[in-house]
Length: 110
Length: 114
Image (cartoon, rainbow over all chains, first blue to last red; front, side, top):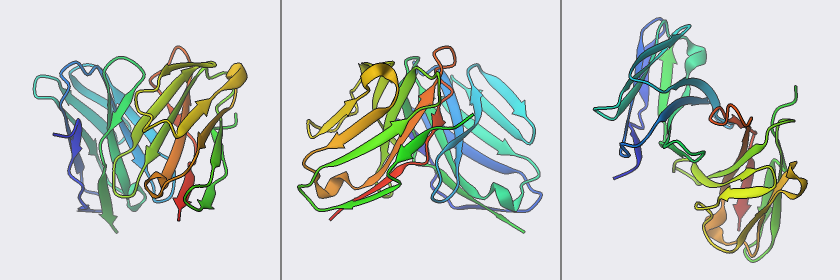
């Protein structure tokens, strides 16, 4: 079992729709959770971090964490073509080592 | 403020040769990380420096890889001798001491070993 699992996609949504990206992790001791966006050929860019159960909203992005289910999600409202990228889920157990998922490719159709 | 920079952006070498990758973190960031992404796989942690000290090198694949951060500023990652399976993108990231978990990534070095 991979430590951080994501559906590789691609996930295709129409412009203006909600994109829902999901991630599960195996280590119950995980404490910090991150979503990175990576455009093709570019470096990962942190877009959201979440540390406690519940929802965290930042603009069009909402991160959701459920530690009991070992589940993290990212919702993108009013999806735009510029949101088309690979979204990486990453998890840290409290130290500085971060474990990444393989990423989900998102396509937003104009 | 300048971001994390990496050099070179691309490197093509033959099996058995040596390559040295360089990373310059954001000024003032004590934490520096090296990661690698091989084709089709997830980004894998290699090691973590705090200033010039190695805090965690559990992700280093083998002793052909040597990372240094003399003076606690820039870091180098040397691969000697390079093997075919070392091909991939090597990312460097840095973070402040206080916000250690907000890591800023560099553009990466794309290494191809032929």
